Length: 112
Length: 113
Image (tube, rainbow over all chains, first blue to last red; front, side, top):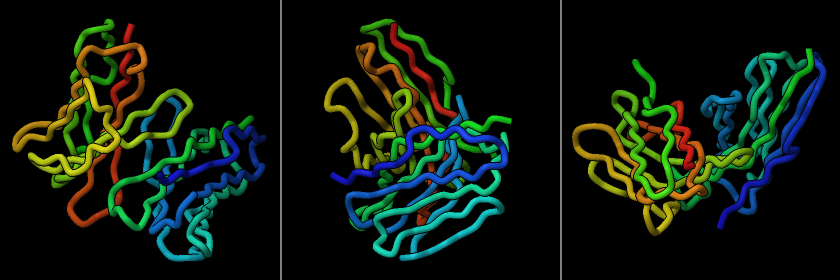
């Protein structure tokens, strides 16, 4: 079945440093979504990418979808302590318009 | 507009007991999804339901687990004869017809002693 791998598993940065998490799928995706989960919280939808090579920005967050629609990345510029949490990617394959396959997530901690 | 609601937020059960987890989707949402999250893991799809219909239960264990979304009332995820390995966070998500974005509830943390 479809697998979504995410690296790194953990990332600790100093406040102000940049952060990137990478997501790779074993199959071509129809779209990919990114979620953020604070410790003890629930996943909160951040964004969806649909087009090959798509790049979207939300303030300090930049999301990319690979040309082959099999990989994606999330980059945070100048991290803040409020960025702490686990960032998950979740992909949809062409055969389903609802089933999301989640990566294991990257836990980001930020040292003030 | 209230978000997705789940209760209880925390549930403790002894082995062999039953666990009932409830999910009320956002107003206007008719699609409900259940996911399970083990510690330091991603979310694993369990089941997708629409009102009175199970659309896809391919992620549900074959035994002890069942789900329903009745015409009236919340969606229920039922785990019979719980075992320690059932301890996890169970998240419900909902979406409206025609939209792919899923909105997650706060989850139910199940602990089996």
